[in-house]
Length: 279
Length: 141
Image (cartoon, chains in turn brown, red):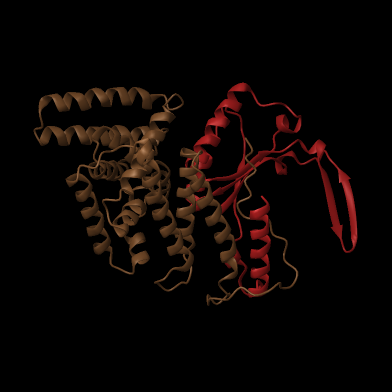
């Protein structure tokens, strides 16, 4: 059950955080509320079973926690009502996931990506926050990428969220004029993650395919969200190319092997990443 | 990791019955979800086995046999190639495949061999050659 919940979380967490951030306008708070929803799921689903619409369940739970928090913080009554009204609107939408606005979700996801990669944060902070919010990696999974401890990563993430709050970074997609520059910041983060997996400058294994795969996944998601940005497609193509070449770089014993000239007959395996674009 | 997700054939798919409008719409939505999640690598429907052919290998012999083939349960109607973090994630996605008619169906998930899985037999030279092939395919794709 725990593995099932983790798998569901992997599928739902980014959408969840993006959706909550839409309401809270605060990415740090959004993640906290999402985590609370996850804890609730871990507590309740083993008994009740995984709900038929886990995304909606998690969202509703996170919103309840959000409203609770606002009440406890004794924020102005009006804000609570606003959130409540928004929450109602949202839950009506969640109820019919087929109608559930892919557009607002796409917008929220873009907002989340641009916020996590905001240039006000240091590069390390952006990478850590991206791995956390957009890839759903735990601090334990992130730490080896930096050859540092879990608590150091956790602190870095906390500080990053605080910086975003303190500098009042809006939860928004940048204006057209700024878009290219801000996009460059996002692409840099994705490529850094990929590169960490590709060469794994630190750590035991020379190559960490999981990080490469996360970067590829992020690249694909971004290409889908911003299909007219050539640089995104270029980055994805570059990563796919390098990822496919990476298979020659480790010998069976895990040592790095230099690419040599043409070798014996190949096994004729199918190319990776052949996207038929079917359906 | 990558997985191949194989939709097993049914009598309807083998009869060449077109999917309902409802199923087509739901399947399109589902595929869009997969693309948006960065999971989808490839996917297609397959024509019924009546349009297919088998090639049997025996020593140096090659025998070509026209479809249709009998064991519907073992035939395929479609496939996907997904990139997922774990088999569990693949299972969760698979559970979401639309099935509006509620009919019985089987979907099989098979992890794809990655180069590291081949172990000692897959020498550095073979790996490198394979990588070159893939790189060529990427640039010509």
